Image 1: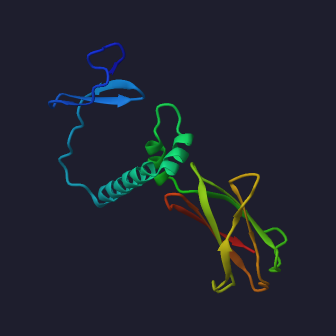
Image 2 (image 1 turned 135 degrees about the horizontal axis):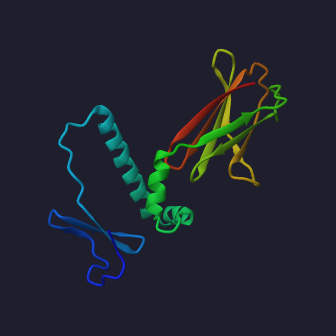
Image 3 (image 1 turned 120 degrees about the vertical axis):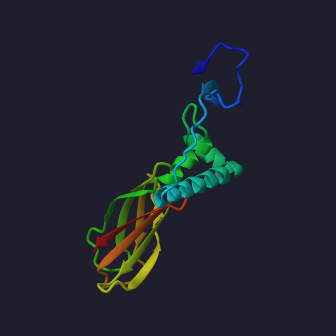
Amino acid sequence: MKQDRNSIMRGASGALGNELVFRQRAGKTVISLPPAPREDNPTEIQLGLRTRFQEAIAYGRFVIADPLGKAAYAAKAGAGVSAYNVAFVDYFKPPTIQTAEAQNFSGSPGDTIRIHATDDFKVQTVHVQIMDEAGTILEEGPATVSTESADNWTYTLANAQPAAAKAKVTASDLPGNQAVKELEL
């Protein structure tokens, strides 16, 4: 139940015995029933999810404690959404590698791999490993972000790698979530 014109309850928060809970949401006082406690024993999956939620809470608190991190997440927040909420949600959503392509790749220095990676907030880094058929890493390093779009990245081969057979692309976001994609060269 939302209270708009009740000056007595405006700004209230907390519980009234075991009957009502008062919360503030987007500048409005919301009254609800208290949450019902669960009486069953949690499963392993439930315990794992509770742990993930605790980690997300810790990440959200860490972000809003840093003025720069809080400002970055606040810029992405909409009406009635806090920087903490955006950081909390970002913790659960890993980046996505939309495309990874190596057109005309011959293993020569200067050959490029183009990556299009997205995230609900921001892709922090993209790392590329060049491997041979057996999976031995021949070369690796960070990709550079495009000046036109924060979602486009380019990895430039530094050394000649004629035995290069595949590339492993890893995109990471701010909370440390990762997406991995392998590419045949």
